Image 1: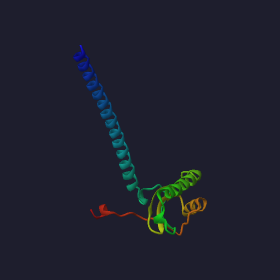
Image 2: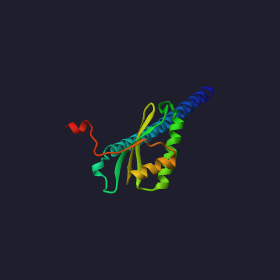
Image 3: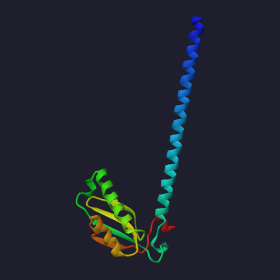
Image 4: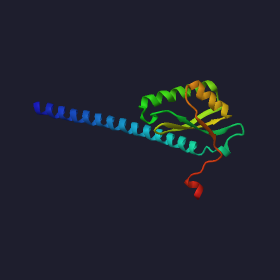
Amino acid sequence: MKTLKIIFLFLWVVTLTSCTNNTKDTHEAELIAQLEVQVSQLEAENLALAQVKPETLSPNMNMYVIEREIPALGDWPAEDLKGASQTSCGVLKEMGSEIKWLHSYVTGDKMYCVYLAANEEMVREHAKKGGFPANEINSVGTIISPETAE
């Protein structure tokens, strides 16, 4: 009888371990599937952003590159960059749909931001409301890339 109990306990432990591993494997598979969906969404968003060109915008929209001189910007920690981004997004939300921030490039002492806006004045207003410098604002006429060579 004791041997039977040991065999029963052994089978129960094996079954429990197997179920736990299956649950773990299922959970990991679900996480991987969710991450794959998120990666696909990000790739689609990046592709959509890459396809935004000044010549394809509606007549009342323009593309601008804004140069912002900010000393030691390249040394800012991620939390400070996040805070600046949140400030910018808050101002943009207040300003409405006639201005949109596409992305920015952070370098040592400068940031280059790409915006869509109805006019240059909106870009200046955004900078003023957000407390950001806008040292240069240039309208983008067209975009070229390696695909241009093909």
